[in-house]
Length: 214
Image (cartoon, rainbow, N blue to C red; front, side):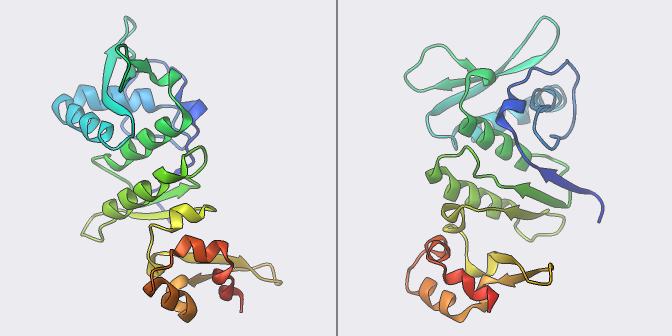
């Protein structure tokens, strides 16, 4: 495998103020988010403003996101929350807000890797944001020509609630030490219960997905 990207986003890393210098892509932990913002603002300022407007509309409580350039040419993110006159810098924002912003910025990459792996996006996120985030990931992985594939690992049923059985694979390690992948769509009882309106994450929590081990 080559040309793939792994994201294991750390909000604390994203709060760091890196040295000035534009960078095209987010790195694994997101500590260069300021550099990516600098690159996008420099190379495509109008498109970047549109991106910030779209992202702001998808983060609860945020009415506007913009940037401030420091004297040493660093670009700082500013978040305007409803009910507050003055903006907050990224360093003051919650883990959840920073994670959602980081993932949505990742999805706006104009030249993405063909295979994107996202490790446990639920960490630090309010559970009601997970279904919306899952929908954003689905919309990005459209299956169209040149669109990237997304592979997301999770331990959070609320995230799985937004998915269909054909989109979920259960990884289970056997007694021989090898892991086996089973698609939830191959479990007849799971398909039947989902068709009757039960959420897939709830079935997982109730151990119905343990059928993958049989």
